[in-house]
Length: 505
Ligand SMILES: [Zn+2]
Figure (tube, rainbow, N blue to C red):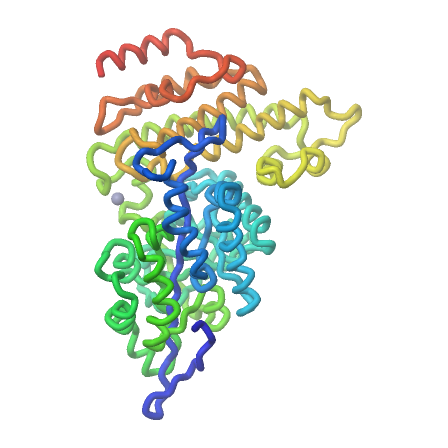
C-alpha cells in the first residue's frame, strides 16, 4: 500500500501536484519510577493494569507496533520511556526500533526522530543544560537506532533560537513546530528554513492545525478512516499548488498515545488511514526526512520565540503558570525557583569537586549518559575524561566523582516538563520532580557530606497547591522513607514547621 506513486498524476491532460500525508507521533510518558528503587508505583487509575506505562503499552505501543504503523509514520520515542519499554516489553520495543531500519531499507532515510533526554522545556534551561539534554538525547538515539539522528522533536515543541542552533551544531537538520510559532506568514504545506548564527540553518515543518487538533481532540473526526480521508484531507489541500503541479504536504503531528490510549480503536484508524483511506484519495504517505529530500525548503521563516505548541502564552505554562490550567497555578513559579536554586548549588559543588579528577566537568557530564545507562564501563569513562596524573586518582575520589555525576543526572530529571504541565501540585508528575531532586540531594550528601536538603525544603514551604491545602515541603515529607546512610533526617525545625502546616490542613 505504501509503494511510491507516480508523483505527477495526470487528470484531463494537466499535471496535478502530488499530495503527501505525514503522521507524526510523539510517543512519550512522564517518568514514573521511584528514583531510589527504580520501581513504578501502583496507579489505581490504570486498573486493571498496575500502572499507566503498562496500560498504554497494551492499548497503544504494542498495538501500533504489531500493526506496522511505526514503519509508515514519523515518530519519536522518548528516551526515558524507551529505557522502561526495552526492559519491560523488549519485543514491542524492538518492533518500534526496527521500524526505522525498515524505513531506511525502503527509502534510504529513517523516520525516527531524537528527543532531548528528560523532556525539559529547553528555552527555560540554561545553555549548558540545553546542550546536555540535546547530547544525551542524541547519544540515546545512536545507541538505540544505530545511526546518528537527523531530526529532533522538541519537548512541547518549545523553541528558541539557541536551542535550534545547538541542535544544528550537533547534526540535526529538521524539527516540527506548531503554525502559530511562526512570526511571519507561512504556508504549512511546505517546510521552511530558519537561519541560525554562524551561517547555520535548520528546516522546520509546521503541522496542519485543524487536522492535528481534530485528530487529538475530536473523536468524531477519527471514527472512520475512509470518511476522514474523504471529508478532511482534500479540503486541507492548497488547490493553487495542486493546479500548478507543485508538491505539498499535510503534516498531522500529535502525541502518539492518542492512537489507541486516549481513544480506543484509533490505532486501527491509523492503520486503515495509512493503508487504504489516504491512498484512495491520492495521498501518498510520507515521512519528514524523505519529504525534505524530495522537496527541500525554499523559503525562510522567522519564529516567535520562545513559544510552544500547548498554548499561546509563551512558556508560562511550565514557568510561572498560565490561565490554561484551572485555578491558581502560582505553585509552578515557586517550585521552579526552588529547583533552580538547588541546581545552582549542586552545580557549584559538582564543578568544584570533580575538577580534581576530570579534565572538563561539563564535557564529562555531556558524555555521562552511556555510563548511567550501563552502556559504557567506568574504566572506559575514566580513560576518556579522567585527569592523567601520577599517582593515579585514588578510588575514593573516583567514587565521589561518580556520585556527583549521578547527582547531575537527577538535577536534570527534576526539570521534566510534565511536572509543570498540569493544573495542580498534587499529582504524580510534580511529586516525581521533587523525588528526583531528593535523589540528587542524597547523592550529593553521600559524595561530600554536604546536605542541601534543609534549604530546599525551606523553599518548598512556599510552593502551595491551588486546589488543596498541600505544600511542597509536605510533598517532600510524604516521599518514601530513606535509610540514614542515604540522607540524614530533616532538622527538627523543619519537621515541626511541617507538622504545624499539616495540623492547619
Ligand atoms: Zn496557556
